[in-house]
Image 1 (cartoon, rainbow, N blue to C red):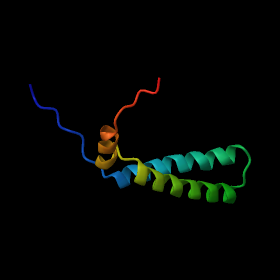
Image 2 (image 1 turned 60 degrees about the horizontal axis):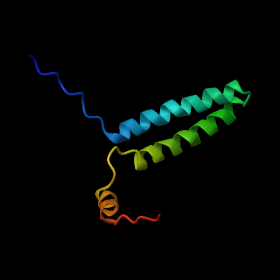
Image 3 (image 1 turned 45 degrees about the horizontal axis):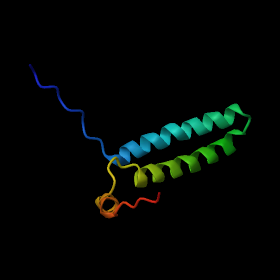
Image 4 (image 1 turned 180 degrees about the vertical axis):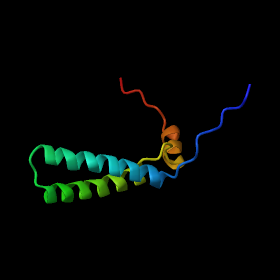
Amino acid sequence: MPHMPRPPSVDHGVISLLWAIGLGAYIYYGSLAVGVSGGTAFIFAALGAFAIFVFVRVFGEQTPPRRYAARRRSQPRTNQD
């Protein structure tokens, strides 16, 4: 049985950029659909895409930081009943 190749590793910055472009386009075309002028829609979409890029870049990792996971495990459980 042949071994299936693994998918390529994609840097997290590329993933963040794809999310920003996709959701920025959604904001742009959605704004145009509800009657916002083109220039205003572009500004809203650009600001939204930048915020989405930063948010996904900072908080979008799949694994939590080790210190947070270790801190949660070390806290004793208390029964408040």
